[in-house]
Length: 187
Image (tube, rainbow, N blue to C red; front, side, top):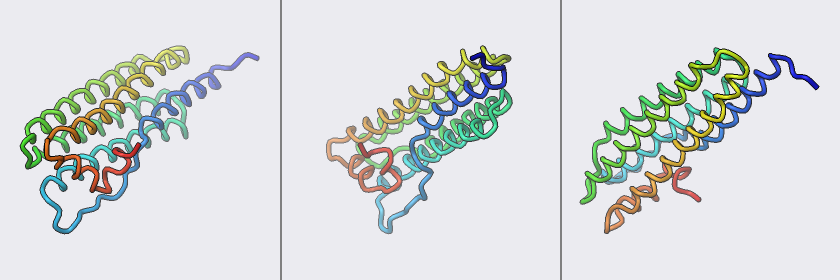
């Protein structure tokens, strides 16, 4: 059975979409502020809230490709991922450092994460900008998938690293106590 050009485009776009949806495995979840929360608790909630907002944006970008599989929707989705990544980097930077002995290390870790995610976003944009045919789309899909998987792994790794930074366990407790962090710290 031979697939026509439109059908091939839809199949390739659906493959890219499934990767976007898998990478956006968090929910945008409402931010919860606990009365009497420490500055460290507030910082951890801010980190998690920013990341889950980014994940929701990536998921939404993937959904837009699924509902309208085309080169244009793929380019729009890549632009949306880029914008969401820039917002995440800005949000993480604005959080500053937590009030713990390892606060500067935590801030540096978030800075490294922001840089890595921005590089990943640029790689996705580059892969998508080269798409001009169905075969190009099929070739771009593995690069997008790989980049999104790497970005998600970097997020999980950074959260794990942040939890283990301080000897007193303040950051670990702050992440564990924040409902904003549930989807990032479970399993």
